[in-house]
Amino acid sequence: MNAKGAWINFRHPPYSIRRVLERTSLMAVGLGYGLLLLFNLQLPAEQRRQAQREDLDYVKAILRQSKDLILRADSVSASENSIDPLLLKRLLSDFSSFRLLISMHPKGFEAGFVIPDVRGGINLGKILASYGLQIYQGDAKYGPVLIDIDSVYYLIIKDEIELHGNTWNIYLVEDISRQIRQQEILTWVLILAALLASMVTLLLTRTGIRRGLEPLQRFGSVIESVSSGSLDDRHFDPKYEPVELKPLAGSFNALLDRLAESWNRQRKFANALSHELRTPITLIIGYTSRVLRRSGSLSDAQRHQLTIVDDETRRLGRLITDLLDIAREESGSLVMTSAPFSAFEVLEQVFLLNRGDYETRLNMQSSSNGVDQIWALGDHDRVVQCLSNLIENAFKYSPADKRVELSCSSTHEYVMLQVRDHGPGVPEADQELIFEQFQRGSNTAQQPGSGVGLALVRSLVKRMGGRVWVENAADGGAIFVIELQRCQPLQQQ
Image (tube, rainbow, N blue to C red; front, top):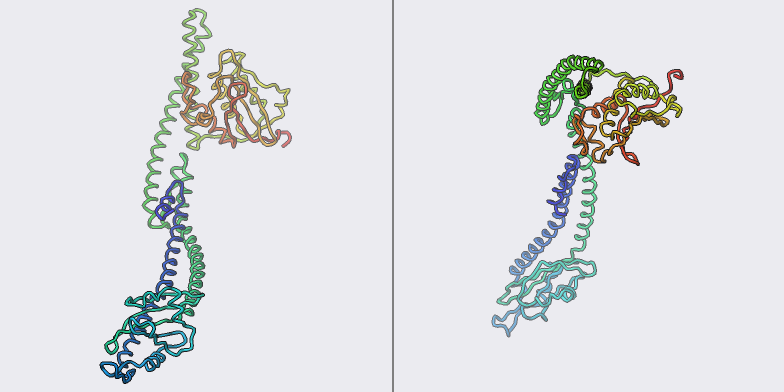
């Protein structure tokens, strides 16, 4: 993956700012040391090539200055003088050394090589033959060229020089094996230093990034702790925070203030509305019940209509009570207790409270099954309220000829209070959704409802340290389960 692809991959959600910064800093450090190693490899090589060119220019300058010292009398030559190979050989020997060899031959006459007397390991013929450079012994100039023969490194350069009207090819060969090995050692030292420095840099960078992101983590913790009941006391103090975070903190605090003001207005409205509606609804329920008890003079149609009014008014009363409890729970003003209670007594109380509304369709598990020995920890009245809501919901979706069953089971640590219906069940995709406020399942279009009762059940059970869920029975229907902490009976505590 190229650098662009890697950078884009960092931004694929979800990604961590800390890891992006760490990887970016590591890439920057690695790139820096990579360039340093590249310069370490290229710069010395260029320096060696430049030094060899300078040495060759120096030799050529000395040869031009000493051209008269290497002449000999020659009657055949037009100038009666020619270059003495022995004198040239002696002059070249003065420039050559154990690791440096300078040789010449007249251009176009390779057999006339003048090689100085130097005891060294440089064999010009072997070097030229090994790499086929003899083909360049004509007019071509080349070099410096690096040659490796059996792990021995040579640098060779070829040029031309005019001496007494003749053109000579001049070769400068240098054994640079020691320099190459020193460079290799230096390269390994730099690689180890780069690795060590990268580790130290990464450690320091991670520490710096972690400390730099601590304000964001604190800010995130404050945001996570915000709830509808804590809008007024969850402001983020930017006094000792970085400059970059202060505008965000100011905007967050202003948003909290606006939310708190809006929530307070909604809470006051809900409380006022609930209290104002309770009185007329209670009066309507009372008068309707009284008329129904004295319905001897009413026709069947009138009695049926009054029954509908009574049922709907009671349902509206329960809805208002649930809404008020939800508002109180979210604002933190809902009072709840936590004390041991008998699971059988709760089931019996719920059974008696709801049996009149549903006649013989409500069944309860018998105490002979050991339910009277099971005790749970929670708010007795709120558990009754939760079970009543579940029973109402169960009868809403059960056929008219089917029953709703109350039961209880337990483990060593938990007590499960269950309400089972024989309706269509709850699709798996809706089993979490139906416990959200004002949310209903996908198969409830034909049934009236507000999506409040189950949301209140979950809120109340959660406040008691328990949990509630729904599961589908093997033979049809849904089972709603309230799970609470199990405890010992009062007389054993």
